[in-house]
Image 1 (spheres, rainbow, N blue to C red):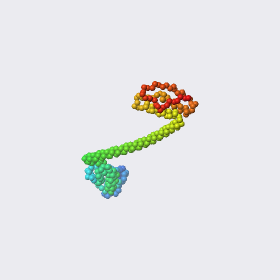
Image 2 (image 1 turned 180 degrees about the horizontal axis):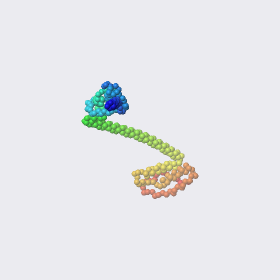
Image 3 (image 1 turned 90 degrees about the horizontal axis):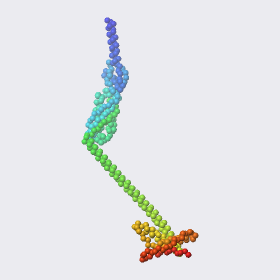
Image 4 (image 1 turned 135 degrees about the horizontal axis):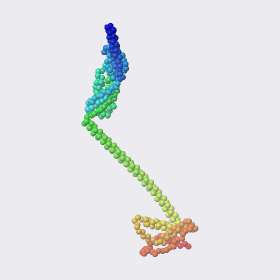
Length: 340
């Protein structure tokens, strides 16, 4: 009987040791922090891994998740500075930095962060106009992050990011904004079109101006060239006339025959090439033209010398005169004299 009682005592002691070890050994998973309370008072925080506490005197107070967490902010109505009603929702990211403060400084941590974020969304967005609100989301996010993070600092919480997910103005306001945007774009299109038309007109005027300037310069250059050519031609004509005059003054009748024959030939060429002449009647004698050519040959012999070989003049044949009442020959052209 005594042995049986001792066995019960040993079994009881073993069970007691097992219970003490079970109560004193605590394992904390990664990403969590456990607070330890001794007789209800916070003493320390257990880190991830194997930890020991005093059984029956200490216990775990709060199991805090220190990983970054996401908090969805529901949609709420916001009145802007210009009295426009919009609906906005957001999302917040926060992380527990101090497990003891997060456990003992605030009750219902997530609800507190949620209400604080919603309140600051109404405050920040309510201080802005609708146009500014729709076009400056980054500014809103920065202001919300700064305000909320400062507010939750004493709780041992770090708000890493606050993002506005969606801003929805009323339907009638969206329609009005659409019409305003369309009118603004049409105005800018008309302004651009007018500027393009003005620039085109300016460019065309500049082109016409440059063209007129170049045309005037071309006409001036052409007139200058033409005047110079006429001057040279007049000089050559004067020189030729002078030479003929000197020859006539020296008593050479062949010079005046050459001069008259040249003018006569030029006149006949002009008559033959006139555009309004289809049939040309030549009231002249062949002997007159032949005599003029003879005069030209005589001048050539005088210029190149008597030894120049000249072909004999063709035999002169006087054709019968046409039946006219007046002579048709040129009285100013004399036939060449027979050589002595």
